[in-house]
Length: 256
Length: 282
Ligand SMILES: Nc1ncnc2c1ncn2[C@@H]1O[C@H](COP(=O)(O)OP(=O)(O)O)[C@@H](O)[C@H]1O
Ligand SMILES: [Mg+2]
Image (cartoon, rainbow over all chains, first blue to last red; front, side):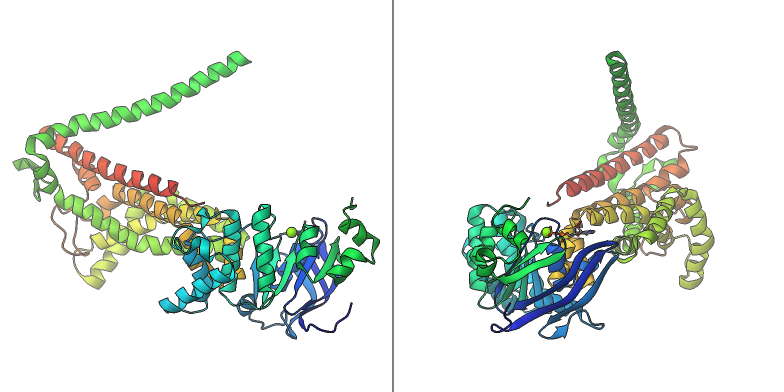
């Protein structure tokens, strides 16, 4: 893999992760390129979600876990003692597998981030909410019902709301864990279009089960297998010239 | 086999119906004994009358209604913040193993007989209040403090349950957005568990309004309109508890009528609790 342009946003070296005695990630080395979409594929249970959650230190919520190795964000090790985890999570946002809006109004969902960041001026918050909803391509659908409960939206709309909620925090990296797995094809298409738009400003790491989605959306693809990163290259290479026979089996659908 | 099951089914049905029947009977009895007096002296004179002098045929329960609400209000002032803090503490801040020890201890608090709470209030709180704030010591303040502790288990247990019942994705979602743990609790978890918290408060309120024994021991039982937290007072329940032993005739009926008022207050609170806890957003 070439490490030339585009520049690196995150750099993972010698990463191991353990749930108790379960060695879930084994010596992962990968670089995440700035303002690119990096797709992570691989069979269920191979550690994709676990890996994603090491990037914003969300795994720390799970008791009895252990991590080794380094992960750098713009050159800074995010696991070094004294790291401000809250600030890290503002820089590295996350969209979950199932849309998880808070049981609040659409407006309050998006306003949550700015409020937490200490923005209290009403007009500033309103501006931020509108901006984020527009950036998440949800504004036209909800602009006249911002104060209704977010749980009344369709799943596809809820997921875009969750993206808007992340955008309102102005992160640099957005992690997406199978963001379309609960959505129908049309809603999926909307999210994929949105990702192309977001790529201009944000670095995106997406876990997906959908080979075509990875091929369509990403510039770089990593193939995980049993806790290891078996292959990492440009998406084109992974799908047309895979080096590892396991990768080939998986991307051609012969995985068994 | 089928025969046996049918018999068991019938027995269960019978038990269920007989308990409902007995409850209905009790309700009917209270109303049958209490209503005639209310009708005799007039609803207004009964509910809003300020004088309770059985020997002169004066049966006004207004001071007792006010005292009941006052004592309860004071109890909530203590019980809500403390109970909610404990619930948050248990569900969010301590390791699960410590919770396993603390939770039974809290449930034990609910099992302590109210006469013990009353005794503790009488021995510890009443002199303390008397020495520091003056007045008789036997007061609404003392009653509120004791009741505040008595309703803690209700508020803690139900609030904690509703916090625990939240999908874990709310918490993960908030933290992933860069909220601190405290912001997550305060801005996401508590609002999301709101209906359960409100229900816990209303049930605690029901318990507070209904408490009798401990209140007889520490309220001072004066039949007058309370004007400060340091005044002695008599609530609806203590009125019944104190006088039922020797009352007869109209007096006895007036005590049942007091029970009728209590019945409506508790019914209203429970209905409110049920409707609030059903109105959960999911
Ligand atoms: N919260 C957890 N506690 C314990 N083990 C977990 C947890 N989450 C995932 N694992 C384990 O880690 C491994 C990788 O899981 P995961 O990262 O969810 O895989 P993927 O997202 O690729 O399907 C699996 O063996 C799974 O059982
Ligand atoms: Mg997963």
